Amino acid sequence: MRLMIRGVLLTATVLASACGGGASDPSPAPGPSTVTVTITNGVASPRTFTVPRGGQVIFTNNDTVVHEMYSDPHPEHTDCPEFDSVGRLAPGQTRQTNNLATARTCGFHDHLNAATSTLRGSVTIQ
Image (cartoon, rainbow, N blue to C red; front, side, top):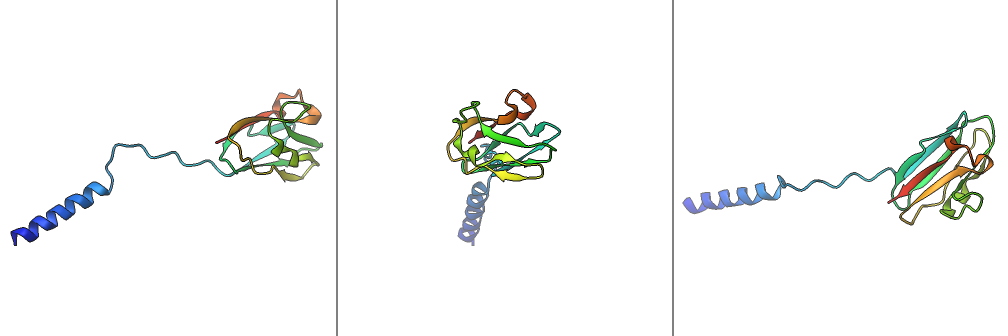
């Protein structure tokens, strides 16, 4: 009987130690795989955000004028060529980048209003 009780206690101890209670912090939850940037009244929002590698950025033009969203620098658009798939956005139109596969930070801007800070932003790809 004592041997059986010891076995049960040993099993309970092993299970309890395996079920957590460790001191390590859990990894942060991954960011969303897509982020939607909405352009309204000449303002892109959000302007700074993070997506995981393979994620995409969706641009929605809720403004009354055309916008052309590309990666920095202006006018070359070479930092993140994945943004080239967005390009021209008519009012009411939504388009998305290609998959952002390389970890880096990319700036973006409205090619038609490159100096307008409210239409500039950056995405960090992790």
